Image 1 (tube, rainbow, N blue to C red):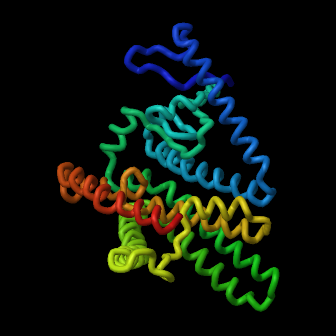
Image 2 (cartoon, rainbow, N blue to C red; image 1 turned 90 degrees about the vertical axis):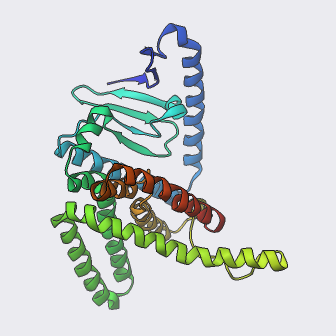
Image 3 (cartoon, rainbow, N blue to C red; image 1 turned 180 degrees about the vertical axis):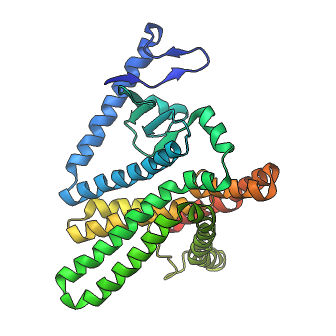
Length: 323
């Protein structure tokens, strides 16, 4: 196993390991070393509970991407690269390849671990394009499905925590076990059907719920500000944004509260990726369904409309009210 710089000039086939690019490569090493040291220092400064929650968050993301990869391999879709970080543009500057013998794809690690991905390459995209819709949806929804299993297990374990404190909660735990088992059994029995037909409906429902929770508060504030100036008291929508969650995790010293944050993160990964907005998994499922029902032209038009009319306003609403 050895590590190599991940940036290549695709137009000329030159790697930054080329002596002509040694200054760029030296800058890359220095910048990434500084980032790695900074993130390690910040991680070590955290308390032991935030450390556990942070590692659990990375674990949930790993499970999500691993599920995509496993389903791709099962459906004979070639994989070119799996990585931590963002695979496009300037973000490649912060990545290094790890070559492992007998592994048929590249493994890439990043000093900016803001995301993760599985890259099937041009050939893999062509294979996916020719698959039946249910198989496409299974690939796109596999990560959501895996995180949903995690969320169910975490929610049930949380009920066991309550049982340890009060034996009188036993009936609730039995009900939680029955519900968890029934949902997990349903997901395991019909994964392709659920990814193809249930997830799109849930995504639309989540969008409607989010707008119902946030929009009235925002409209009330705009109206109040236009008439009287200032902000209307008591109109704040109760939605935790990533900054609020991150701050809460960093300040947590209670193990139970840390576990609750892990449950929130697992549930958040599911609900966020269900949204039918590209480039989220739900957006890929919605795009494939639109193409199946109405053709490629309508698919492109609706996808752009979803980004402009739903995605951008939703990000703005959460940014204004949820951070």
